Length: 230
Ligand SMILES: *Cc1c(COP(=O)(O)O)cnc(C)c1O
Image (cartoon, rainbow, N blue to C red; front, top):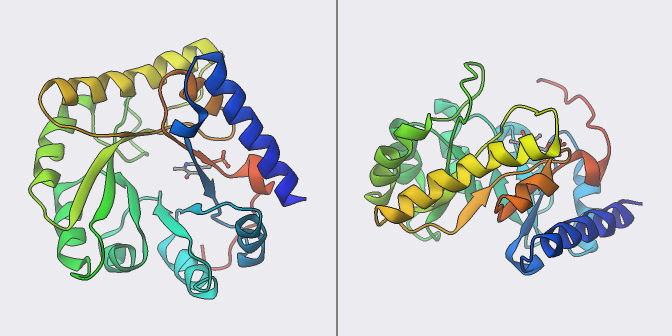
């Protein structure tokens, strides 16, 4: 049952928060529903889950349309392609993977005037990994200042997808680097409230390092099915 998995994951988030003396209410669960059918999302929504993460704009659009009767909050967590920014600007409440000024400019232009500002996190590459998105830590502040000047975007914080580490302690140390990036921003007068970090295999370490948004797919939905056309 999907709702049992939801209860299990929520229980693990709460336990991880208590172990490091954090308020479990300060951690949001983003259910990563990429490559999962709309029916599975609906089941989780019926069990009370509101925030969902998607990585592929076209796949997401059809599900967002199908589930329009539910008041869901959609988070874009995939690589942003230039020809997909309009779909993302129009249909999502959050983008976690901003890593280029040009993408920020496009999202800002394409966000509907009547919609609330688009929440954005800057993706940070903590360890150089050319195949992944994200800016190096030293490029975070200039991009943050660029976003702050765009009225249709709201800078919420930072996001990372670090490589797997050999122990929970090593994983936590990696996540702590994102927390340090965030503290540097705060020290330089840029206020944010979000650290988007932690997935099925490492969210407890991320919570110990200060995560406010864990993005969890497999532990909630089970394995992903291949999606036609990808
Ligand atoms: C797929 C994905 C997740 C979820 O991964 P799981 O291991 O299934 O929990 C989280 N964040 C991003 C950016 C992803 O692409």
